[in-house]
Length: 123
Image (tube, rainbow, N blue to C red; front, top):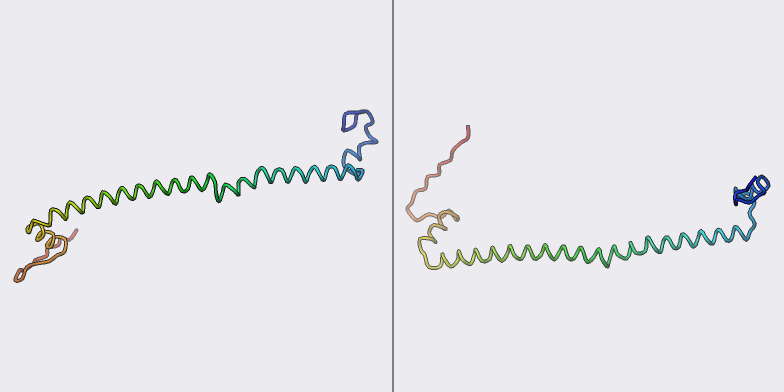
């Protein structure tokens, strides 16, 4: 019969194969290997994850997305600013346009004018 290493000697080596009686040097060797494997797994898996979580690639991607969002907001504000500048230019020389804005948007009336407010009700 073959033992767990594939060499002859079967039943008398079974306790060793199950780890029941291991020499101290062999146990120390396996403990050191296990510790080294855990440290290596930690160094290769967890540490880069933690470093890239706060800085590096993930931070770069977040900042790039934020920059694109800010640029889009700036473009919208520039468009609104142009529109308001154009409206200001139109209102600066036209008294009828100023009166229309005062009446429609601000709800102002001239003296001695009566205002009738008509509201429709939905059935």
